[in-house]
Image (cartoon, rainbow, N blue to C red; front, side):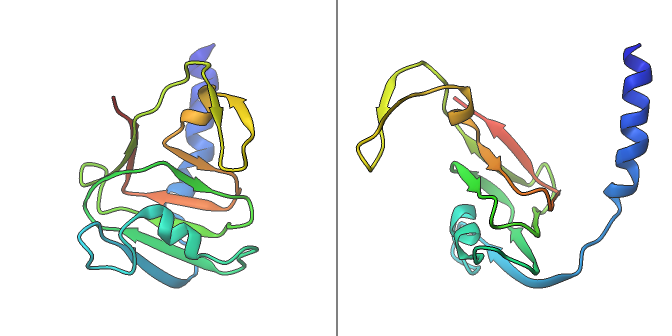
Amino acid sequence: MALLLFVPFLLLRAPLAGASVPVELTVVVDSKGGGNFTSVQQAIDFIPADNQRWTKIHITAGVYTEKVTLPWSKGKVLIEGEGPQETTIQWGAYADGAMLQDAAGMFWSSNTSDTATFTSEPDDLVFKGITFKVHF
């Protein structure tokens, strides 16, 4: 039964793999300072709320150790690395149920959803040539 469920998934996803999007703006992330930004989150923060044009965030080769969040209002984003072995975004967090306090003074318990390396809310995203991982 697992094979029957897996095969349709591959058939549905295959056409999307080669799809292209009409990019109107490209920004470059380079941890060494050779781009528009040195972190992925800075590039995401640059995208205006309620974004209506496709924006490519090109991330140069390297390991980016940061927690990245792409909010619902910042869709139409293509995040492109220089290859899955060349470009990695990583973060090292785990859920331990500890009580944490945010900048507004609110307390909350850490859980698994708080530990993601990359959190994305929009539906219209494309990822290409990049690895996301959790490291400790």
